[in-house]
Length: 466
Image 1 (cartoon, rainbow, N blue to C red):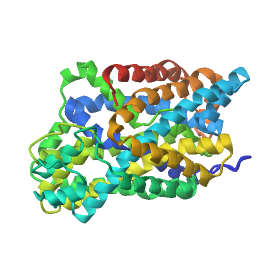
Image 2 (image 1 turned 45 degrees about the horizontal axis):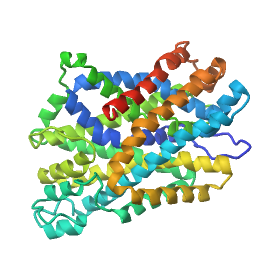
Image 3 (image 1 turned 60 degrees about the vertical axis):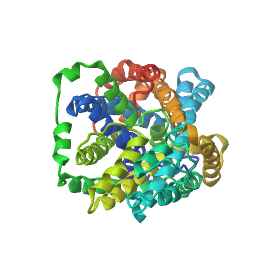
Image 4 (image 1 turned 45 degrees about the vertical axis):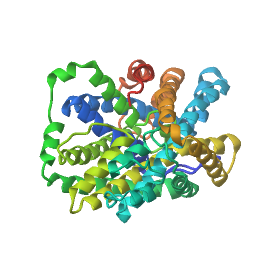
């Protein structure tokens, strides 16, 4: 699928391999532990309608732009930004320098994700063995399963809650972080086609399949109907609340992973014969479907207990949901195991995308082989991940609030402002049966790029919007 160039770069072997890999990069924790919470917080369809609108707007501008920039540049953000600046000014150095920021952002998120993935691997193992849902009130077992737990804890909920009391990941989980990083190394060492593409072809369909099984099972539980009623409720007055629109935009923006890094590097592995517009559309559709399926699992599941989702983030996934699955009885523990396996797939496909940008940077800039690049980047990532465990939440906030939207804005500026208009349109139309309309370039220039800047400013003022 990817034509061999002078460097014999690796690439995706099929269109759907590329799309599934991009879906995997987009489907992450934001879809699972934040999206259902936002829907619950802002009133079902009252939040979903503006969210759908922003998915369309960002999908047909930012996602297409980053895929096109990467394929046109034949490299990650450093190489592509440099080439864009060279076309405009004749010199590429400045473009390469600012292209390093999205690489840093990708590495920063990968490090934070490594800590999160350590806990996901641990919970997945405990859910499969039944430990997570069979601890009951035996605090000796709880202590053995979770490590150091405050002696005053009397229940599983209290014990797990205390784990997150001093920073989200206050208690060390080094061995499972190592497991998560080793899994990423193994997949990525096999290459883009042999590792990333094959892994995503397996994990993404299984992720959707597991969530669908869970959604069907939960639909027949008493009380689940209250969750559906809430999801489909609409408060017209709520649509007049600017906060709803700001957070719906933030959710769509960060969920689609426009940050000037992962989508650019995956685009660089894309063949010249692939239609960018249809690929971007499929990524946006399936990323949204993943978020919706997670919502149709989590909100009705919470409703079976007589409550709605009251918190997002790790507290929802690692504290609230295990209690909900444990309280279902019957097949509840199986549903819980399915849930954490699906989350494991979502996290793994995201983390390999995040690590891929800095790995490709070493390959492109320093001409290192694939294996040495993978090992070096993961070794650095692991060392830092082990050190930042108590401050993972603050680390992730810093990267996602500031570096990611800035990286997206820089990529947008490079494509819509620095590249010549004809070059940009030729890049996005390459491989297309139908040319993109005249709306695309001015929309990206005057709407999408300002939206990226808005995401940066709003996130800084509000402490994060996605």
